[in-house]
Image (tube, rainbow, N blue to C red; front, top):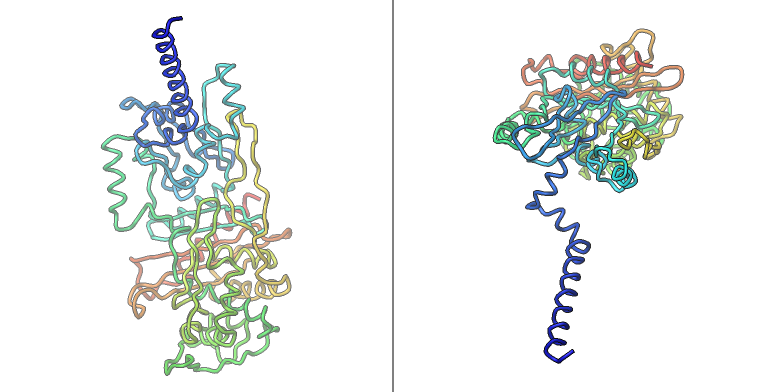
Length: 484
């Protein structure tokens, strides 16, 4: 070969080598980057080219897929009873991505998860149409319906747990929204989503997980647990050292009780029965801020909770003595999510053991083979079994003949605690109505519930945890019990 031809051959070889290097660099080194690029429409087209897997409740799908006629995206998401299930599923939109379970479990639902590699490979040889896998939840449809119907047109939220496993049985938030209205990518979908975002009532806010409220008197069960765990009191029927009136520390202000109730030196049982601010405020002050924070932390405060959907951290604050006394009765800077207060009731009902809340029971391959099963996990032990049973006795007195009688269920042992949390500067806004509870059967407690209601239309004097929130909790507990 003469010299010019040899040079041309070498040059062509270099070009081929460069092309191979470039092709492999793009296909393997930059593959993930290019797949994730927002301008790569081929990835999006492929994502919506097949039916999405479903989210399952009680063996039935609460989601589905329908073919579109006005887009190059073939399928879009639809929901059954979308407003009721949106706080659980979140949304999946061709234009606005996804949230909550629809986002966290996207790999399984689209069929693109590494866990489904074998199924995808097999379908290449069998010619089966690609579909997504399913997410089987822990939700109880009857309990969810009772929660959603109970809240009605009021703002509020409900969280219900199985105390023995941590399984989430209900997760409702109102007002809600239908994720189907912006599941596509048309201008109509965009307008519908924008309308929801601009709604002053925030229907897309998951109040059960992402809103924190002052817990009011429901927090007194945590303060009672702290008193028992730290040995401040041991006998729930013995008198406490609780003068009336009681002056807040480092202050001239007197802490008030609601109505003419017997709170002077009241026992723990009677103080919880009548919700005595003076008893629990002084109790929190006697324990001190550090011990109160320590007890709250054991129940899950001051950390985010993952269900796997993230719940905002509830906060028991570092504070000075007068504010710590108020935080001990669920006011001041004390703030919590409904899920967190369901966790408190759950731990007490489960003899002091707090289980990790979760809502995904199984992941299924498209052929319904189970590829993941959740195993229950203990999160902490906020109080001993002995002290938990003492708090149970106190909470059961509240429901039997205290402020929580509206939660009574015939033939069932129910424990609860009402709360009416002050809201706004100097309590200028209408208060929040709270109720936390559990129901017990012979084999233990199958359900613990927390309910918060923001009823802006109610008369201020008519707002109470026992009046507004307890009946909702009762119906949720009854729905679970009836299904056992």
